[in-house]
Length: 450
Image 1 (cartoon, helix red, strand yellow):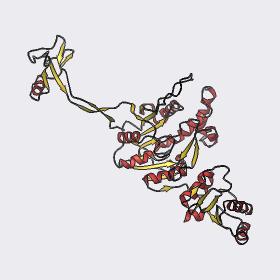
Image 2 (cartoon, one colour):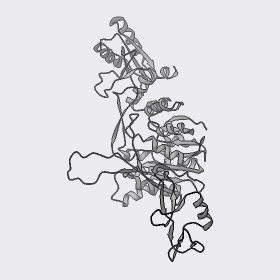
Image 3 (cartoon, helix red, strand yellow):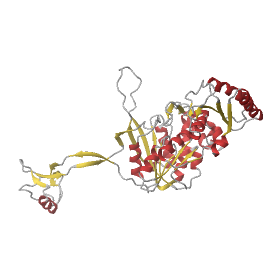
Image 4 (cartoon, one colour):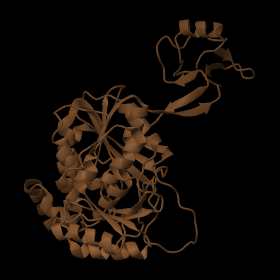
């Protein structure tokens, strides 16, 4: 199986091609069922905002395995409190998490990042897929605090944390316990402890422990500690004391209050803090093991995996995200460029891929009212129009584009489409001869082959 690559496509379809028991660690940060739309500000063109949605899950009902969906539809019938679409979302996630379970090694683990919108539904489902006994921790990571602007009556408190559900594949998974720096100076502590222990009530510095108590160490160890100057009588009271050395780090529990969940370094609205991924990857994997992120977004998980000398695989359904990841971590993008995949792509994302990534141009930031211009190439001198149509582009489209080029006071333009009609080529020749405007017609296949 190829590693250090980015796959463009639905993680369900891609993971189905991976062998059983091939992955050491999976971290996934899927949509949270937040019922929101988000905008991305990408590296190459900061004025361009491309939306992605975490809404309308109900529309995916027909795409989910009927056997899986039927189980959740039965729950849906008798559960009034569920948000419309929540069980479609859970069924969608279950299909993908079942693949995660299959491809994990017996010694592997999965970390699912979520929040209050669907976290408890996801945990119940993961108990079924991974096994109740394989649940390890619910890790809490704090969110960015909001400053007080005005105090008013509200329906609920601000949500202070997100959660990471940590499951092992089996009892063969062990973690390296995470620690944090927590510097404490050395200090002297009372050597007497409560409760009687045989042989631990010897005389020390002319004293014995109170009835029913004992000294903390054996007599031999105490004598050696006196020589090492880590056991002494208290300067005033004379009571035995032992030295607790300075501490530089402490073992963490599942409350990660020292880290904030989000980061906005790469312009991705749901981007996670690299420190979280560093902690997860160090906990549950070793160098050269394989880390997979099936919902990779801008690639934080694979970027950290690369930095920590792990092999990595990233998957995202959005070509835009895959291109951003590639710039961040290198490697190659597999998929997302077949005719079928391109024809299903969001029109604005398709135009961005062609103009910015393939032609090194600039995209038009307007998604509506763009006046027939999707972007420009060659230092903004040539207007470009991109058509993702299933049918051929014809003469009427060429005439409309000619008007757009004239409006921009340009003498050249380019239309990119899957195919063109015969009269389209004839109209281009006429416009060049009569209007002195050179319109190039280029096929999508030609662009991608070059």
